[in-house]
Image 1 (cartoon, rainbow, N blue to C red):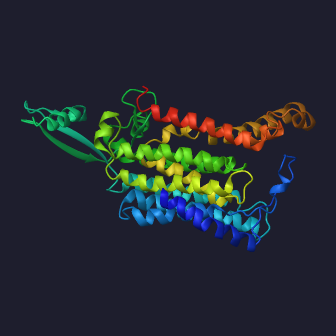
Image 2: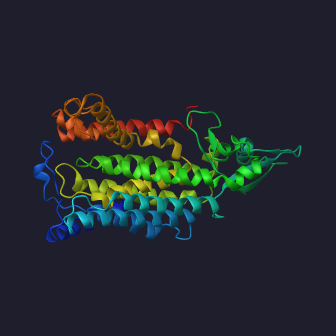
Image 3: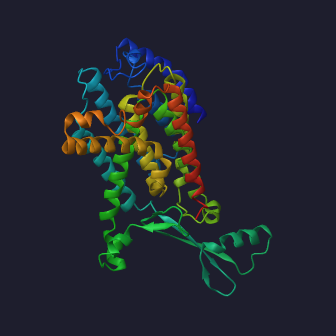
Length: 400
């Protein structure tokens, strides 16, 4: 994290100066928002700073033969390239529409397929279950693992032996439920498949779910990136939580104590998570109000995709509606605005629909700008909401 912060601070200014020299300025549409026109010409594509501050420390400190590190690095570069292409078309080709939406979706589906197939079929992706051989010879589950460690510390382990087995599993965490695990195989069992057949074909459910999560979260981060520091600060908070999940899931003692899946080698993802948080916090130095640089789609699509892939790896993707609640409400506000407008237009005509919109403007942060809230107040309050949701996500480990 420290190295990531240093890299951001050192190279950030140089990249901003380079972007200014190349006249890589933000194209701003006049939407009648306070302070909007003043942002015209502010350098964009600052996501290059974030990506550099994530990738360099990870390459320096992480085990590069770890499947989770390889996959998250591929995801970061892949999504960064999609965002870069979008920004390049907007800035250098002077096309405000940027990369066509269908090509963005193709790119997101592509990385979703890579992540989904790798996590499902790669032999290094597994869950470890401990067994304790008791004096009576009965195999017990990990519930006795803490008893064994206590006996080990007391020097009294006569007749006790710990063994473990690694297995492929499509389990993920289901919040607020005791023994909170959901298996993607169970969806197929509803249609009458036996356990063995369901296990063989669970990828038909898992991989589309991965594609949906990556697409939804990356687009959610993209929608949230509309005010100085909003997406960056929110992503930093989410990154801390995912790094915590990676740590406890990769530690046998904590995983057993919290009654969550122990995932061998997932702890290496903490290094990437720390670099991710450091990059976001460091970027805030230049991106806080008034912003000296915008991350552009190079940054926002990458941040959202990284968050989604990390959550899937640590088997916490079903917690994302809580953890990424800010992204979710931003996305929903756009969907609701469009749907309500179309409904009113069909029901009472165009003029009525334009005069009776659900929100003054979407995404939601622009609604509050229209209500004359200062940009800094909106960002700070969204950060507070993000922090509350992050804390709620963490306590789901014990709140069941």
